[in-house]
Length: 250
Image (tube, rainbow, N blue to C red; front, side, top):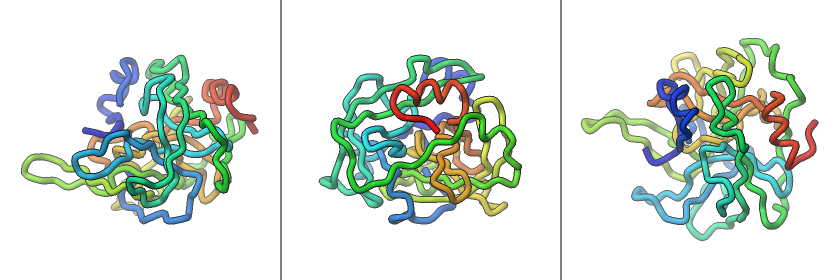
């Protein structure tokens, strides 16, 4: 698969070795709903005519939050905030900085990174980060808003599953399934009214309810993007230790 996104079956093995991300399924076009959410732009076009391979969020005028498995530490990357990206649209460039402890372990993958832009992004209000340990006692009725540029549909064809992309920012909501030390598991089961992420959404935000607070970033899920969105908490000591190097924390 061409987009970074770890499957639940592969999670504990590949988090140790590193891996390439996920898309919004059972969702709707975001339009101008979440202007702080952007996509990482590939320097070369994919065979289906698309360009974006991971998602993320502006958390300060010069810092873009994403997942560590979306890039290589120190590499130069481009980011767009256009809700419907086409080649030639505005791209902001910066340096990819991954958590030095990535890939970590199954208990804490440290799968978190930022892009530090060469110049401040103007005209876009950054999203907010959660306070320390503020997600530990969430109700299982808590809903999250997932945003990203990943696959919008998965089809089952004679040759296997096909993942469809169009470089458009999409949004869906899902209900909390479970919490542990560093992960949240969010339902994306359409039969229960939920939506979620898929390949190409990795690094993208999962906002707390309808707020602009990023509870967690998308890391993985089931292979065909129908069941569970597995996201990395941003309120933990380890996530905050990394982020504190780049932004002022709440």
